Length: 164
Ligand SMILES: [Zn+2]
Image (cartoon, rainbow, N blue to C red):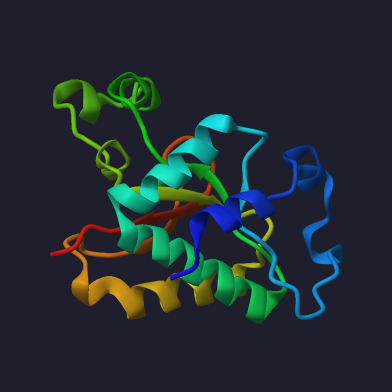
């Protein structure tokens, strides 16, 4: 497993990241590090915490980043890791199902990570989801590991894992 802190410090400042056309980055054999939405100290802190809380999920994100680097010359960008109860309530504030019976998200247990998808082509998205599910579904307590979906906050990759 790659040293997470090395990854963290390789991260470019986020203003650079969001202004990039990601496919214009020079990729000559260079590993593109995992990126974070805006310059969120919270996400970076959570990312280093994730290494302890859920090392398998940490590794999945790393593996996916490597795959996206190799296959498409792109990186993955984390938009959410941990979610509080009040954030969960807010996210589902318009859901009748949730109002009738609150449910928890894997993000509330360090079991979920969301990744930005809009920088990937539809066929790249399909490849990434399939790759992760093939690799990890069997050891996963959850029914699937990777999904491409929306929960009111726009389409994104949702990656979830807890050891069986
Ligand atoms: Zn999610």
